[in-house]
Amino acid sequence: MAMMMLGWAKGLRNWLEKTVKFYFLVALGMGFFYTLISTVLTFPFSYYVGFVREHEFGLATQTFSEWFVEYLQGNGIGLVIGSIVIALLYLIIRATKRTWWLWGTVAVVAFGAVLQIAYPVYIAPIFNTFEPMAESPLKTDILHMAQANGVPANDVMEFDVSRQSNRVTANVSGFLETTRISLSDTLIQRASPGGVREVMGHEIGHYVLNHTVSILLMSAVLYAVVFALANILFGWLSKGERWGVRDVSDPAGMPLLFVVVGFLFTLATPIQNNM
Image (cartoon, rainbow, N blue to C red; front, side, top):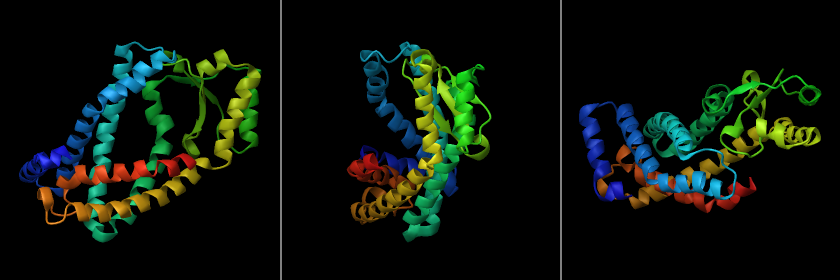
C-alpha cells in the first residue's frame, strides 16, 4: 500500500506506458517490480523461519551461504514465473472486466495444474539430485504397491534431502507422463524397511484417492469467492480514481488488489486448513 500512497505505483505505471507502451509489458513490469519489492521486504521473515528456526530445532544441515543460494534460486524462479502469471491475469482482467474474478479463477487453477505436472521434472531437480533407488527388496515392494494401485511409474527415485535437512519425506508427484515416486535419502537412512513402506503407502494413497485433483477443485471455489469479494472491495477502496488508479485492470492498482486478496486469504485460513 505504501507504493500507492507515495505515488510510486502510479509513477511506475506512467513510465512503463511511455516506455514499453504495450499493456502486457506494462503489467509484466509492474508485476516484476511488485514481486521483487515483496521478496526483499519479506526476506527477514524468510530468513528467520527458513534458516534460524530450522537450526534452533536441529532440522537444518545447511550453512547460511548454502541456504541463501537456494533462497535466491527459488525466488528467482518465482520472480520470473510470478511476473508472467500476474501479467496474464491482468490481461484476463482487462478482457473480461466485471467477470474477471471467474475467469481469473479458471486461469489460476489451470496454472496450478500445469505446475503440478511440471514440478517433478523441471523444478524439483534444480534443488536436489534425483537418482533411481538402488535395487533392493524394499524398492521392489514399493513398485509392487504402486503398480497394484494404478500409479503409472516404473521406477522409484531417491533424492538428497540430507544436503538441506535431516527431515524424512517422500511424495508421488506429477501427472500422467511426469508421475514420479520419490523418497528422501534421510527416509532410507532413518526409518526401518517397514517404516519406509508405511510412508510410501501413505503417499501412494494420496495419488490413488486423487487428493491433488480434490484440492484443486476446492481451491477453485475458494479462489472464486476471494476474487469476487476482492473485486467488490477494490472498487470501493479505489473509488474516484484514488491514488491515480483508473479501475481494477490498471496495473497501478496491483499493490491494493494483492493486499485485499492476501487479507481475504488470511481470513480464510481456517477453511484452507480444513481443506
